[in-house]
Amino acid sequence: MWLFGTALLKDFMSIMKVKFVVIGAGPAGLSFAAELKRRGEQSFFVLEKEKKAGGLCRSAIWNDAPVDIGGGHILDKKKKHIIRFLFSYMPECEWDSYERDSRIAIGDTIVGYPLEANIWQFPLEEQLEYLLSIAATGSVAGKPMPALFTDWIYWKLGEKIAETYMLPYNRKIWSYDLDALGTYWLYKLPDVSFRDVLESCLLRASKGKPPAHGTFYYPKTTGYGEVFLRIADTLKEHMQYEYAVNTIDCGSRKINGEIEADYIINTAPWNEFANSLPFEIQDLVKQLHFTSIDIDCYNDDSYSDKAHWTYYADEKLPYHRIIHRDNIIKGSKGYWTETNSKRRSKPGEFHYENKYAYPLNTVNKPQVISDVLKYMERLNIFGLGRWGEWEHMNSDIAIERGIQLSERFVRE
Image (cartoon, rainbow, N blue to C red; front, side):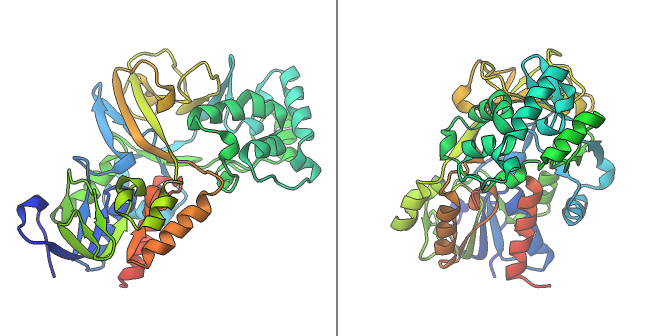
């Protein structure tokens, strides 16, 4: 058995051997490693190219308060086992509980999210236009669900919602051909029936299944990234920071020619080391696409609001979402915007670019990533988390996947 301290890998003269190497210290990689350790496994090492752990959930300090540099991340209260896992590193007394308040800005009107459950917040004439549009949709008429994203929007939500909100908003956030996106990922959107829409307008109250993260936790005094720093701290003898994985010899499972593993658990984007993957996998990885998102902070109250965050459909505005920082992080001021990097304008007072923010849900992606994962697993190399599985999963899902994968290898 090999155990490693925090010395740089390059300081070792010989190739190191370990049972597990985890590429990436984000939520998925950390949960996998932490569960290995909890179950008694000691022969593992976590490689992280950044200076600290957390991945897209990392936090920084700006203007004397935290900012989540990967965008707004919160802890959904639905998965109790994931909450117990995180609370074992950062106890519940260090978190605040919230009822989600998110909104949508369309022109000069701001309504609740999701739009179809809050049409009653528009003036009466606009309500009628939305209702007539939804009544004429293919979903209400019982027509088959289309395969392409743009067609689905019209089929499910109608022309009015499509053209005032869904199409412009999605053009902004993805900055990609919407007709190239599939519909398999739309289970993430709230499901509000036409009956729910009508009832909400009559009762002047939101109806239908509540959106994801309807109730959530957020740390009282730190950013969301704090909990992942604490997990990493329990693994420090197994961690190596500022170490970029450039090559993987898939046959011998040697990383950068310096460390050899029985199993490699990859949570990083596959295209970061695509040229060292088998030739047939290289062609598949080239078909996996992603978006980059800029985070920009502003120390003013121009967008003062009681909401936690607001979505903006207006394509004249570069950003697609504003996080009302002072409504989530106690003692903070100002707000931050989230903008597709292709739409970048003047940077804010604090600026950070996330090169890898969201996997793009292109039509062929499910088959492509399935082929990649099956091929690599035959080589004892496993994809895990948002980038290893190329799936737009929230942190709680990434943590759950990490725990589940550890169970495949180490039984209690």
